[in-house]
Length: 336
Image (tube, rainbow, N blue to C red):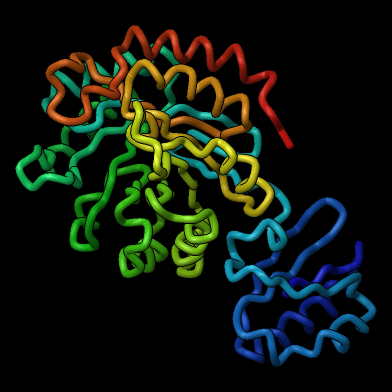
């Protein structure tokens, strides 16, 4: 349920209304706009008399919200959320590219890639320390040592770092990580999501490979319900019947659909979506044109010998070309 207050409503009356709402065991998500104030009621609103609330002098309108996600709902929060990651902003007109290798392999590798992507215009550094792999015999990442190497690259370049968590027990290792990534396989790891709701760090939440948009938003709701509203959504391709070339099918329609339904920033991962380096550039251009708030791109200084996902990784030179194309298309991006 949302309660839309009249412009210049009496503050004392607003305070009384909020106290009454909370007395029924409900939480309030307050959104202050230029022309109106919206009170989003979170919890069991069946006990609220909608006619009684609507009759109050300070109330313009009252609406029941059918969608099960409340905190992530644009109806609760009409203005775009801007997430700050170590000084880099994403959302609300702020666009950022996150780039780096699929996995951290050595100090020389991560520092060289970090310097290269920064020179090309990337604002954040990605790198996998913990790697969820389909095969138990594949490289699983450097784990805690990988996070230390990411921190060294950050110290040398100033780029905030983004890396994936796989389990609640790993949280203590993420103290110096600027944004925690939840991978597609963990999108519905609800215990992990609830724990991340109590963390004072931005969360990059990737869509599951067979998950609907509503399921993605409900996973974001788990994090936000715990108090952490700094969530960025990531479309990284979904599994369809198509197997001709790409690893997954990049759902670019998710960008405008999510923008209609939520105030949270939306970024695109063309590397995992396509699984093929030569397809990353056109998908970066398409995602930018469709109105994405950012991109996350895999870049490796030697893709042929990468320990993980070299096939989809761009060289620094190829990434530089992509960045030039993205910058050229941004002024013409769809804004809804």
